[in-house]
Each structure stands twice: as structure tokens, then as C-alpha cells.
Length: 309
Image (tube, rainbow, N blue to C red; front, top):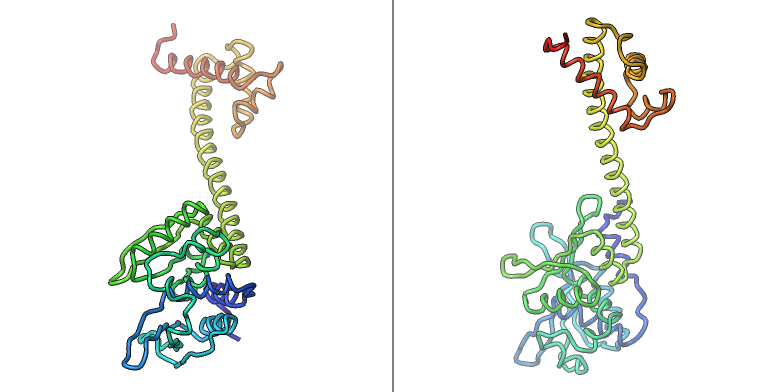
């Protein structure tokens, strides 16, 4: 059996969502219609036509029609994408059977009842996404988008997403259509939860958390590596200074605490100044060890430049 892609899983979850009541059914149907519906005129009648991208989404639309007792409609199988020869379904609905929705259908506005109710807006956006949306596998990229021929309508959706749910989205024009897209992980999770794809949202959240942990580990490893490089460079300079002193005046000629520190450094090349301080008797802080090591370095510098008399 072919494994479902992430996009297919999202679609399956949304199409399987329970239709709870008439208000939600109307809101989701409105989302479908606003995304893909258009008016067709003939000599006999006026009809609303909508073409949906695949059989599964078409079955969801049909369930909404049945739930709302809209039984008069014509269906036909069509080819929705010439490149991939994907089969879709076209629905033709006589306009008189959409009497309760007619006024809302033929405006460029999201109906007030939907825009003012967060739950209904989520259901509406579910229908809009199913009819015209797509999502990228989150292991590759965070990207969800919906398409419309109306820039004004997508601007309304963008404003509602931001003001009511804190979800950032952007618009761009693609040929004769416009696309609204969401590209931040947290916004994608919120959007999936909003439209009812709860399981898909959990998957994205897990992926985001794994990436965050991996990023933290990489930052820590980079820090440790850079720190180790710094310590290594400093240790080389300290060892060279001690060698200069030992060959010229001898380590034993140093003050007692400088002598102890120099010998500890020779015996423990891999330790940091803080760790050397822990081995001193009495123990010293890192700043105290640094001050003494600096004296050793300065003394070696004088010897090297012939300033010792």
C-alpha cells in the first residue's frame, strides 16, 4: 500500500471531521464556494458551478450538501490538472436551491456571522483550504497556502488571521491569481488547529521541537569547540612562556605561587585556568590564576626582548 504524504494525511483528517450542526455546515460550504464557486448563466437557468481537485474532497463537499438537504445538483468527473491528469469533480447547483446562501455568495466579503465567530471562521477556512489550498511536508519546509482570484478577499482572511488568532500570513500574486501563505512553524501549527487538523498540528509541533533540540545541540557544540580552540591557543602561549623562563632563569627562581602555577601548567596542558585554580594550594579563583599567569607571560616577554638585567 502506498504511504500517504503529509498533505494527503491533512486532507484525510479534514475530510473525516464530523459535521456538528447546520451553522458549521453552512460555514464550511461557504468556504468551498468562496474559494472555487462561480456563477454560470444559461438560457434555462442560473447555476453555481464548483470544481474540486479530487474525489476525497468532493465527497466531503457532497456530505455538506446532504447535511443541508441540498439534493438538486449535477456532478461530472473532470480533469483538473493537465500535467498530471488528476481527476476532479465538477458540481453544478441550481441557484434556487442555495436560496439561504445567495446573498452571501455574491459579495466580496466574509459574512459577518463567520468573521465574528472564531469557531465558524475556522470551519469556513477549512472549506476554503480544502478547495484551494496546499501544504508542504514540514520535514522539508513550513508552508501552507490558499489561492483565490480575489486579492481583496484574501486580504480579509489575512486580517482576521492576524487580529483574531495572532497568525501572520503574506500575500503574493501568481499569474492571474493571488496566494495567501503561512511560513512560520508556530503559525502553521495554529492554523492547522484552527481548521481542525489536530493530528497534523501535533506532527508539525514534534518536528519543530526536534529541530529546536538539534539546533541547541549544534550551538552548544560550536560554543564548546570555539572555547576549546581559545583554551588551546592560550595554553600554547603559556607553555612557550614557561619554557622561555625555564631555559633562561629557571622555574625555581620564580615566586612560590608563580612556580607552583607554572609546574601545574606543564603537568596539565589540557586544563583550563579555573581547573588549575582548583588544584592550587590554597585554591584560587580563575581571575587570581589569570593574574599570575599574566605575570609569567610578561616575564617571558621581557626575557625574550633582552630586558632582564
